[in-house]
Length: 326
Image (spheres, rainbow, N blue to C red):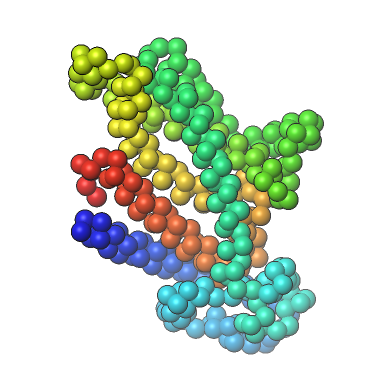
């Protein structure tokens, strides 16, 4: 019963969040300077043709009318068609914009579903790298607060958080790809192309994971049940593995959910540097081309994933610690 009421409440909240995100993005894209039809048709296109195309596409209707029409399609799973990409998937410029029929334009949902698995793979691998490294450093720091491991964890976090991801990406590409030839760096032709960008993202994630994990472990090790465990004859490794880490996993799990969700929106620079064909690179191209439907679709899908991940994380947290209430 709790699960059903929890899901109903959170899904309702999630639907409201997605609606507000859709409204905000939709409105902002239509009040910013510039006419996307001019970009699509070309700078030399006559004004009469610009107005004809804009009218046929419904871009001259009031914003509220456009938004209502758009959301009517969204609830049916239709995110619209790209302004500038034909069904073949290539981007088009003004010279080739001769037919504005929706059927020959690339479907936004198809474009997103083609790029989303790549970004999910990158985000998942980055999270695995960050979690493995942060667990080693953070647990050691939490077991000995103020000790060498704690100071080392603080130093590593300080260094990692100070490194710009675009600079680190360029350095790693030059070192491991151009100089050593160990890993590929540009594009995607196999899983190996995911490793370098995943390392860059893992370095960006690690500081907050290290500090959260070390603080959580330190708090659990100072709890009264640890002293009771020693009195009952439990070994230190058993107390840490079976009790301290289990309780410390709750704040870490919540943080992982937020970090994984933010990764989906934070991979733009990394994907651009490595020419990685995920949502980040797709977003950059859509912004440069003023491809409103594609930008809106990416924002909606990203918001939906954020909502779903946070619901799953909260359910997992209540499984670990039933005392939690959401």
